[in-house]
Length: 236
Image (cartoon, rainbow, N blue to C red; front, side, top):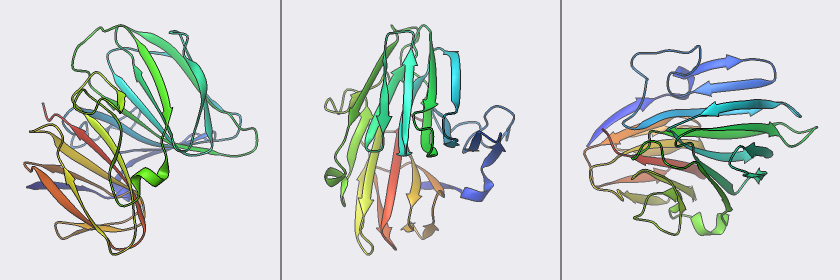
């Protein structure tokens, strides 16, 4: 097993006033040649959006985009006709495919919005654009993995156009949880949403990340109550 440690404080950072953004990989004005992507994972942005503010209508194409609200609610509208409000414990997927336009705003006029937005390169280019969202029970990820988005190996998850899998878990302190790779040969990018864990001797705290390759599974020990995200992706 090979590992790549990305500490939280080494991420790119941009504070635009209405948007406070942390970038795990090169994005917009942040460029680090050592952090352009992890396999087919291209973007993992940790955004805080001020009340009533957001991203006006803008285009995307040939990218699988997964949005996971952490606090607050996102108001989404796109050119496929998809629109809705996505809250904590809901997940949104968008296959940009041959091209679409969308906007995203903080639904609240009083509370900040915190979210992860994650981009993965598609398996097939120029597919018909598609949008979907679903709510997931936190009880179903307590000390176990809840696959919220992914490819055909997990048909009950929100489907994306790639053999990539997005899994959430909430761990009690002192517990150990194994992550089994779903698609053989994939790597896994573990983000600690909150708490503290140990993987292969490496201790990770809030928003620290670890890229793992060349393994069929790995064990995570929770040093405290922790919320985890694993993005499993093909490495090429």
